[in-house]
Image 1: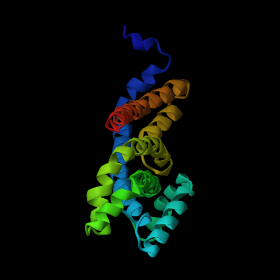
Image 2: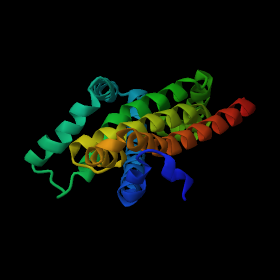
Image 3: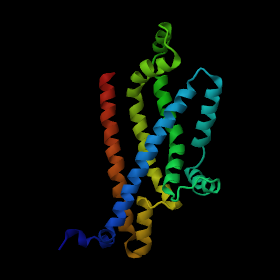
Image 4: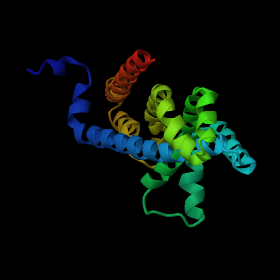
Length: 225
């Protein structure tokens, strides 16, 4: 007899393993695509926040504050219902969930990058300008290479938060991990606790891995300092 069979309701997990696995893969896809998109947009917004152009700084500030203070549920609601009404229709809700998660996460990425840039001594930028480097060259060749050591740990924490935020997409027609678990729990009312604990284990696989990466990065950053 399989020792796991003695766990009450564990057959609900084994019988529905394909759905669990499909939800887990969808969660990873949401994390990867939204994380990449948020990283790109966040970098642009961070550059605008520290730009010498006042209009860029104003736009980036409004963008950051507006999205950081808007509930994720409302952002995904806008993407799931308002965007299709406006003609943005992909035939499936997955791309809309990626758009919503990307938009919501990007200001947190921007703030992590900006804090790292601000941690670089001002003299570095002044020295770069004194030899004729422009803003873009100073940022790309002088500031960011030094800031990346300070940026990586908080960025990983942002991605850990993004992993948990993907669960909200399950309420908007995306069958990610939490959505799959909710469907199985509704179908197997006698195994709700076991199903939810199994979902938690899947999330822990992702978040603990990211946490370990963050710990290793922090150790290397401390050593470099």
